[in-house]
View 1: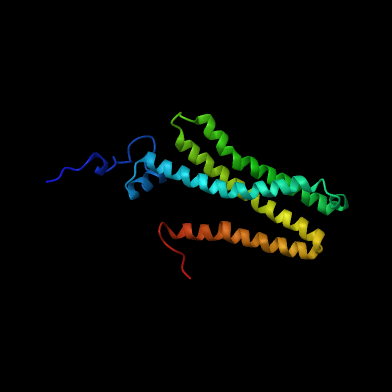
View 2 (view 1 turned 120 degrees about the vertical axis):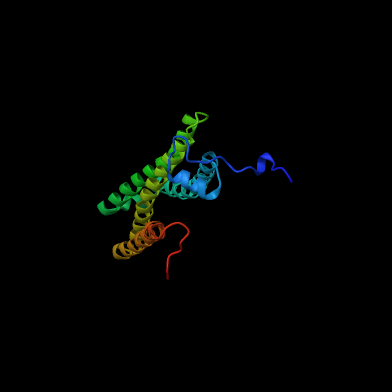
Length: 186
């Protein structure tokens, strides 16, 4: 009879330790992983999501910062200036929140606090995306207002907001409500 190598051995049960029966423990148990493996996987997934989100917010922020130095910026009415200000602030806040996990990681690096990093990074990403949606809609409102007119700008921005709300929040929450591994019905 062949002996199992150490690499073939099953990971120890994940129910012990400070995590109790948390979602991380349930995930570890269902996938045959240790808590550390789940946290490593979750951190890698979080980093990939942050890379996608941060690229978009970085481009938008750069555009908004440069916009104030153009000649057309001086022509903005009170509505345009208000939209610009709110959009710039929401983009700046989204940028800060999407960068925050980097700083958090650096400050807790090698202190065995990966669980806290994943939890806090997840919250920062969710809030950052929540701010990025109105930032995108505000930038679109501003651009369409200048290019096409007010009602077209409101219509285009509203359709974009609705699409963002449905695809970023409503659909994922509907899938989450159906339970793990269950696809939504047609």
